[in-house]
Image (tube, rainbow, N blue to C red):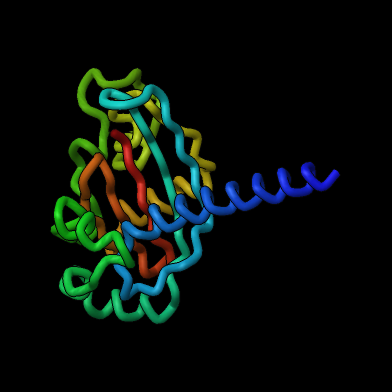
Length: 185
C-alpha cells in the first residue's frame, strides 16, 4: 500500500512540475513590468514532432489595472522599456517580441486570409486571430467569447501588438484588461 501512495505522490509532483513549466514558459513571453501572473485560458495543439512539426496555441492573461493605466498613457514607448520575465531574457531580446505597434492591425496577411487560402465563409471576413493561427492549417477551437475579445482588440484603437520568434504574436489590450500570446508555427 505504501508503494501505491508513493507512486501517486510522484505522479502528482511530476504533473505539478509540468504545469509550472508550461505556465512559466508562456508567462515568460510577457514583459515583466506589466505584473501579469494569471493565465485565464490556454488552448494548445501539437502535431508532428521535431523539425517540421507544427504547434498552434492561444493563451489569455489578465492584465492588472495598474499596468493597464500605465500602458494607456505610455503606449508602445512604455512597452519598449520593459524587461522580460525571469529566465526568458535572452529569448525576449534576441528574436523575442520587438517593434510594438498600435491597433487596429492592417487589413492584410497574416490578419486576413490570403487569396485562395481558405474556402469563403470559413471564418471572419476582416482581421482576426483565426487567420493568423490558421497559417499552416492547424486551427484550434477558441471559444467564441474569447475570440471576440481578441478580435475586438485587434480591430479597435487602444491596444498594442508585436510579433516574435516562432510565429508568435503578443496582443495587449488595456481597455479589456487582457494580454494574449498566440502562435502558429
